[in-house]
Amino acid sequence: MLQVTLVTVLVAISIISSASQAAWVGEAQSHMGTEVSVYLWHEDAKVGEQAAAAVFAEVVRIEAMMSTYIEDSQISDINRGAAENPVLTGGELFQLILQSLDISMLTRGAFDITYDSVGQHYDFRERLRPDEATLATELPRIDYRLVETDRSNGSVFFRQPGVRINLGGIAKGYAVERAIRILQRLGVRHARVTAGGDTRLLGDRLGRPWMIGIQNPRDDQEVALTIPMENEAISTSGDYERFFLEDDARYHHIIVPETGKPAGAVRSATIIGPDAVMTDALSTSVFVMGVDQGLRLIATLPDYEGIVIDDNGEMFYSDGLRPPN
Ligand code: ADP
Ligand code: MG
Image 1 (tube, rainbow, N blue to C red):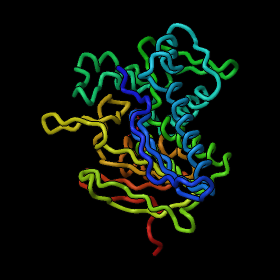
Image 2 (image 1 turned 45 degrees about the horizontal axis):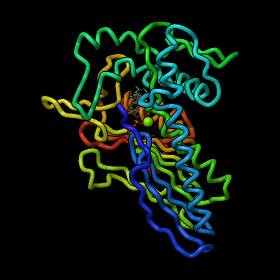
Image 3 (image 1 turned 30 degrees about the vertical axis):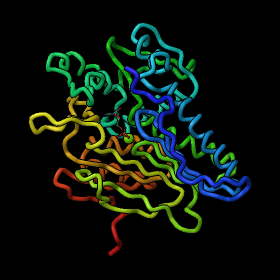
């Protein structure tokens, strides 16, 4: 199933024609199963366009390595072979897997890249979900402790057959974080890079903060809250992007590792902080953990704040976002 990219949409939002004029440059393309967009300021619009192109090239590179929908990706190699023999992985992917396993410990298993052992049986477009027998077989394979990593050679081994890993809860954050690094290296100082629900900002919007909206989970025309931000990352996980309804139940793409079923306690979880890799993984985690447990976790992380919209549409904030009294 090739749910993937190959650069389909290409929107030039504002490209100034004459060569060395300062300008905002914007472009959006389909990658990683979602929309990826770049919006940046450069003294030379032509150089700005090249910088935007470098971002998309980076996203394509990361997707080719980390997408389970791509047969010859490194992650697909792991999923095919790691239950039989350790798969030499090394480099970036190995580091991101290590970080994912650390976040599993931090979140007491709410974040778990082995969710895909069951998660692979959901297809939100085709309205498919695992039947009880499949769930019973696959559920014991969701457990991050089944992933053995060997730092001496950068290899990954699964302690049981049937285990699958998927970086869908962290890879987009990784991609936007990498993109911002590339822009910085190219001399860009004001930029916004977004991949689906994950946004990383560089600097401000020329003397003004970026205004980032959090969507009302039940009305895509309505913004529930707008937050001024600079130089930070923001990620939202929601139950409204990828889902289907069946007999009043909402089946969506964030899975509770203990049950193999979609998390039900909240409609969206938003995390703000310095690093998009963390905000991405934490938004997925807090979505699974729910309001109380989720915000308690965020309270232990001094650089991170959270906003959770629960099943009744009520909004909850972490301490750092509450007005002082
Ligand atoms: P989006 O992909 O819409 O940005 P998220 O960042 O919340 O949303 O990530 C959801 C994705 O995370 C799912 O599509 C799936 O690939 C992956 N995922 C689902 N449940 C879990 C989980 N419990 N732990 C880690 N990753 C998960
Ligand atoms: Mg996430």
